[in-house]
Length: 159
Image 1 (cartoon, rainbow, N blue to C red):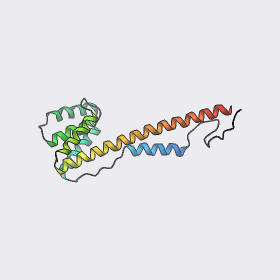
Image 2 (spheres, one colour):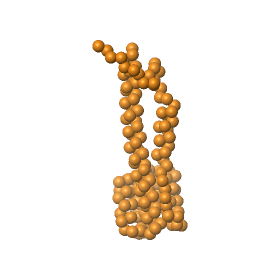
Image 3 (tube, helix red, strand yellow):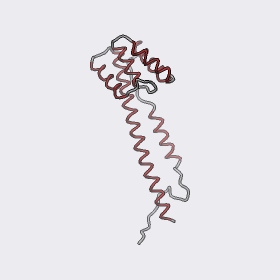
Image 4 (spheres, rainbow, N blue to C red):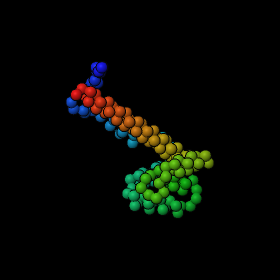
């Protein structure tokens, strides 16, 4: 015996997502690119952030040159910070998020200067937010897929 099932408000012959749902997903995705950035406002902190900004804006070949240059920098907390920051940016041979997080945390464990420490903490927070956002987007995609499957099933039941 077939049990009548009341369809959702989205049911109908043409399956389209409501604009409000699309707008919500779009806002979530847009929000994923923006993370909180609270940085000590020293001159050196600005220099380190400018270095990261150049790496983020660079083409892959330029990033590779930056990476090679960072490998040649003398040892010290600033050189370590630059290498760790570059590891967080894809598009060169040194890209490795896990190693970057480990290096940034290790740098913070050594009680660096205020400027280096604030930039390292800010980048770690940015990575944490980006990872949380990526996981949320994956979750939303799974949920949206389930909704689409339910809609298809309801449509088939009506036929």
